[in-house]
Length: 436
Image (cartoon, rainbow, N blue to C red; front, side, top):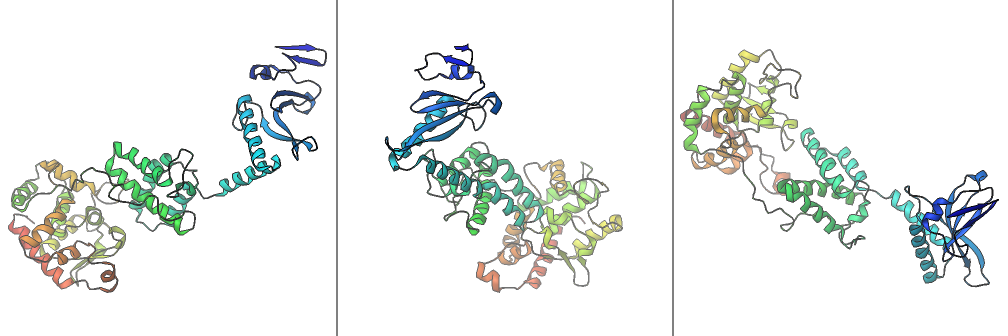
């Protein structure tokens, strides 16, 4: 309880340290006041004229002993806001400072200077957010992949690991305040994602690994990469492959495609036929421009920006493929895109790549066949039924063939072999019931 007596204040027992409730009830006056709160720690209350602030100050002598000069060490302002100190927090901070003085024999002001330097260094240290921002800004990924990585980093990596966490905290063997190493922090984060989305957790770790690799290259983080992949870090969920159908079921499928009971558009039905004739990825196929077709050399040149490996891809134009494309030209020849559906204002200026798989679902093949599954048919049956080598087929699929040395020195396209295979493949599909 505070008793006012003129300009004099008596707070409880003057010889006894103040309590937290007594500090809250203190009223600033016309003069500066100092109240002991224990162990040479004082609460200083400025006069009304100077702002009425309440702050904690520790008193000590340096050098230690009676011969030392009395000094003050500012703890901080009293209060509950960020950066302020309660009575308990002030006492804990003062004990920590005094312990440092007893251990080192140094002036407590040196401790404060060290703390300021450490804080400044931490504030200037590269953070996870900085690494993510610069990695994305410097990336040469295709737009769709870059958007995918950005979503992963913004929605899983930064919220889970802390955007403002200094990169050094992820150092492989460096212990954190909770006793975990940087590597363990990353693995624990991945396990949390794995509980709800196992496959996504592997992807998130892969994306984070690339960000850390960027940080290592810039000297912000030490080797080894704390997001390193391993068989122990990989989720235990079995990978599900794209649904596909065996060779023997193609006649029934092509009959469904021809009947077109769900009444799919002419453009989408033609796209399914082109998909089987070329086994391109649907994203590469759907953006076909008429300008990409070279009838002099009988080639369709798919530009690098629509290919997964970011390299132009050559598709030999077989007779059945040219016939399907000519049917489309009668419909969309005045448009820029062959697979133009007439819809405008959407995400794509041409047919949505998902339209192919949606049409397969409407035909009754939901969970049985997807657009990407056609590539599996070509690779498998191209070898087993037609007898062509896996290398020829994989080159036509735009797969990377050989090790890095071969990729660097072998620039052959094997175009003659690929053209021969594509003609044989087209004939085989016609025999299976594909109607042009």
